[in-house]
Length: 133
Image 1 (spheres, one colour):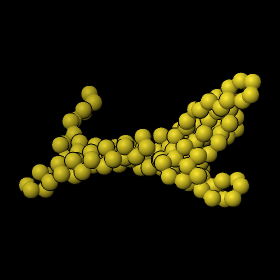
Image 2 (tube, one colour):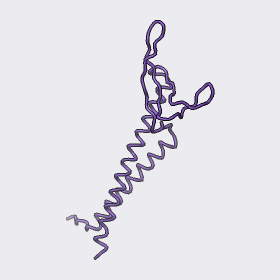
Image 3 (cartoon, helix red, strand yellow):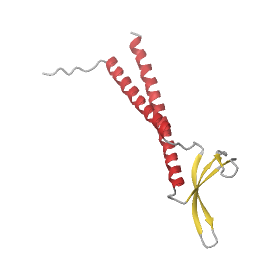
């Protein structure tokens, strides 16, 4: 007959702390890998669609827009708030989408890490009730 003993509260707490710490380490590693290997849009950037009117018709174009001038211009190297991306599906457009997606992933991972940090703090506080005995 197998012996299925219930872990002590201290053992259970230790197991939960290890689980949270392992998940946090994995998420931090994933975050670091994104930052190290992929391009990430600045937090102040987003994609804007605008209508450009030609002589015969109008065209939808896209630009990456920031709250401050951060994009170097081609002509004189000064900074601009805008980076022209061209039409939907252009390489610049797809690259900008990928960069914003990478930023969103990092932001989601950051939120998860913050929640895990709070959980670890709570678990460590919980250990104090066993240390008092």
